[in-house]
Length: 434
Image (cartoon, rainbow, N blue to C red):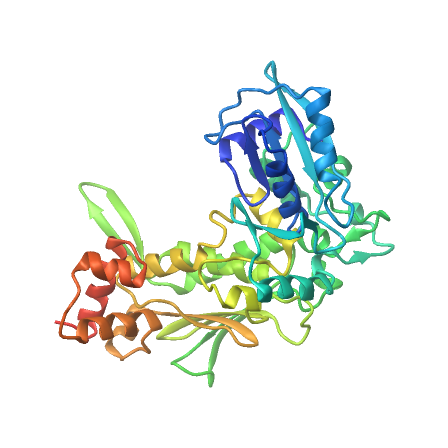
């Protein structure tokens, strides 16, 4: 059961990948059941009744007949799904909680349809290929949910990471470690710890999973002939993220904008948020089944490349930059609880905007087999970089006889006006536009 404090924190953060609000029991109870079905097909979650769309806690009354109707509707989900339904008093207001576990028999159907979670919304799959893809994924066991028998997680817990998780996820210190791990579903039905929990909370998960590390390498020049620095970071995934980010910062150029006496602003050669997004995505979405490769960060004179094993899943490849589907939904949900994943499915767009706003080329992506992001440094602007598909599209549109206005261009390429202006500015710098 979740606590009143946890509910208040969820209300503050708003609806998300694993939280949905209902101001009251809707006239059509199936609306709730669709949300429940979508959570079961994802990483689990909570439907909270008595909170409005703005996160205001107003309370709700669910009598026996309504509760019976909800249970009856959920009973129509196939295969059968067991969820917890209970009420929690939050400052004198009654909030009803539907606690949905991550499904173990994917996919789940309701009314002959499949519902999945996309960001903070539930979507019905209508495309045959998308449904087929979900079936194919159901035949696989998610790596992060595989049980590790005879492993005592309590003997290996990283105290600093557990403390950080409590703080970021707003979990009370009154909840002991055992209850904490139970609450976040770190164990299977047979009480074996999941691999995802080991990767996230154990001091040295690489002792069990040698490939689950980040290798950071700096090369001299633009090829791999001469290595200047080579570090491999293990430990809990959050530690890997922090160590890799810190290593990158040491390699980036830093300038200071001076404002008045003593006041100064740091200006990195590349936006740090781009690296934060790329590193979290690499750790959360990599194919941990692939043991022949590490997550890697490579620094060259003209670019930085971040690579992780596993290309895009087919359903994501078709909607690249707009849809997110993790290979490791349990790990992904833990990163979300720590607020390290801000906008599900929007990471690609955010990185593009950040780079363009900094006057740098858009990130380049390779998605076959390995997922690779190439970020060109400012020094690379003197060398003609490879154009992205978006840049090629803009050049083609601007090369025609009837040149579009900025508003028309925004509509055609599907970008905001600020991003479009920066894209045009970047292409002008490169000499493609006047």
